[in-house]
Image (tube, rainbow, N blue to C red):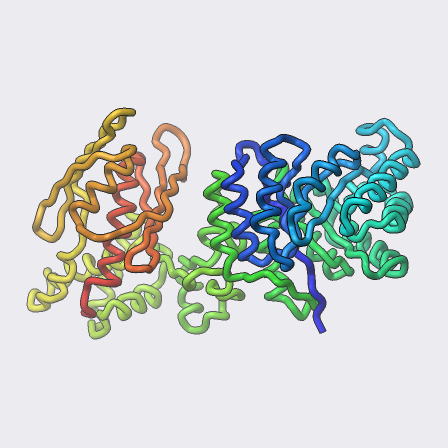
Length: 522
């Protein structure tokens, strides 16, 4: 029978240590509520001794999120009375509060950071645990920089604090120095001794990613007996970050026979949590990041698309639905093969064209793909329309379908602090339509003007801009996610003019909506 791995999320403490990622109280509460929906076991809500604001945020989370017995709320303290008191008074409002304290065990920390002897540091840790136990029954002790510590001193510390009352022992790879085989062996030896000492104490790990091995070290620890893992959403955190919760959890799920373990995490909330953390902290997720990156379930290679269309397991080990996405995405680009393009055309209703027709349309597709990078369904309609207008003028209905789409003609945006405004001209079939609007900013004005023209009730959920090249001629890539009739749609566009890219992305997503909702099958 597989054993349970406890998931301890430290996004709101270690994750928030990223420069510029500081959250206010309401934002921290929103993230904590989402972490509860994700069903993590423990939320580390902050470092209350650091500021009054952090104390209040931890207290609010303990009161409003920790008000049920299915989640523990903790916060970090140094091994000093004032810090422990601060944690206690902020987390005590939770149904299941936990005091978490940290003290170094490596020679570097003991001698250079604290300028004390090992025995002095050990005594400080033991006394801190004894004091914390007078306040709460659950206490976690973290042996900072454990992966660079002398093993026998590390064990001596763990043994002493367990006898003093610690109920969880955390073994951090504080500077990401460990490698999986070495770290796994360390956890195996500690677990063997700890279970003989007190088998009710949980053994935990906290791995940093300085050498890119945080997730691998965490998984090696699980294989060697660790009961609990400390992670952050999207792997954010100090310096190069921490083990990414979504990677650890999905590795356990996907390779359950290897790890013989399971978690309580509701994986279908992973993407919602990732997007919320990214949005509130202003930290973009790397596009090719495992599980939560934009491209994690997107396929553009013709060879891969062909294999996926024949059998999904050819190139897909996780169903996107498992992590809260709709489905895999076949992105049509110049690298896409005939199979993917033909499959998409058939789904749009163009299933009765001859082989010669398809080859000509595919050639036109490649020409446009070289110019546009990504091809959307409405682009295929236009390609088919232009081909049939030239070679099969009797297929009038196909040409009529393509006349439903919008194309940018020109735009003008005025940006100022008093009266931001935008004017835009678009083409729909043979019609030229224009509109103007004001807004809270230039993009808001631009999008309002577009909506006034198209007349659709669209809710903008996400607007993201990034640079995809360097120098003065750098391309700005804009991604938009919108909601229409309860369904989500997304589209991208790139241009050296980010305002133009914003307009193109919005028009692309509107055309996607038209394809899905307003056109009959061809």
